[in-house]
Image 1: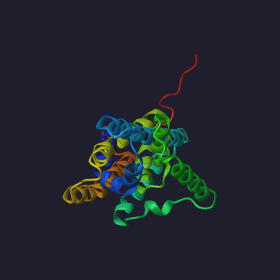
Image 2: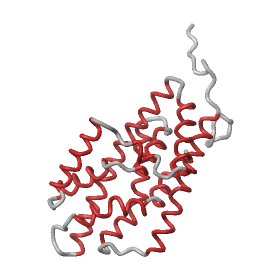
Image 3: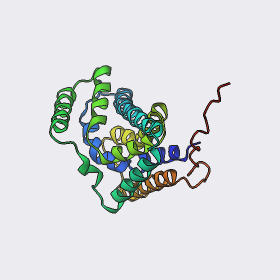
Image 4: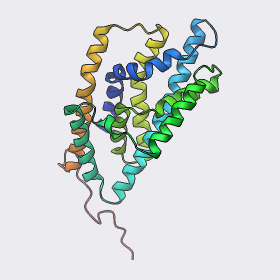
Length: 234
């Protein structure tokens, strides 16, 4: 099993305190179709499912990018650079947030926010899913960090699975937030905020190890020798 998969779930769980600050207001602003506990639960699950669908699509894209780098023989160097960036983001908080796109990218994000705002009060199942999916597109340094981890998985499916696990890690706190009308202990928030950068650093370290080709099974496997898989024609 790829050890990075375990970090995806832990990164999502530890970073969920950050998610409460970023995604919590959106989750609390969406009304339930009916004033019942069951209706609130179903709407909460739809919102979070939509968000995770977006994360999985992002993971697939980054995983495919990582596969392209692998085929080009560049994945090891890219893994070291990506890991170093994650470690730097821990040393310099806010680094990943500074990677916000400019010009056309900002315009696109503005449109996403506009559609999200118009859709926020709709409570039909498809509208709740769309709200969650749009929420997943909003700029977030934690998601950027998880996407970098997904790029090291080596293919689109594994990248999508990595981001799926990351998203599931954020579920308990965000579901509890909406179901409890925003109640959350400050002690729990502090503990999760402290754990988040540690796990981001762990993911970064694992990426660097993968790129260093140290011959450590699972953590830093040796790259196959050139021509090792060549087919001999008779």
